[in-house]
Length: 177
Picture (cartoon, rainbow, N blue to C red):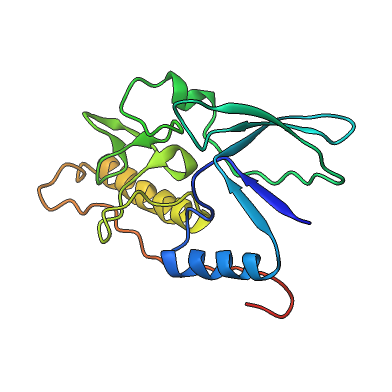
């Protein structure tokens, strides 16, 4: 039996709802269970897992789950620097930025990549922590800095950052796409 423990209330946060639904259905068809809002705290040498079950946020419960072969797969979280900056953030310490990827009221401080909580101009949603987002943000900031050095940065026709989603790829097995 395979069980996925997910600390958040959903999987694949960077993917669109149709892709997420497809993956969930494929996993279910393969007999794979997903436990949402379950955060692993400790993996013991005998493979027992200490888990915090946050399905009822007002009363989280500690559980011990026996396993045979635990496999740990994790995402990326912004580190301590984002915790030290006093500005508006999401719960995971991603810093909210304006349309130019700057901290609001701080045009001298850009935040990009996994630390940035930039909003997609098309959907109004916070952009996912994906490499293609970070690459596009980096190119935008480089051009914006170049313009500032040339004295052209704060013009009224300054263009905001616009993310161009080039698509994503995921695989749920050798015979499935």
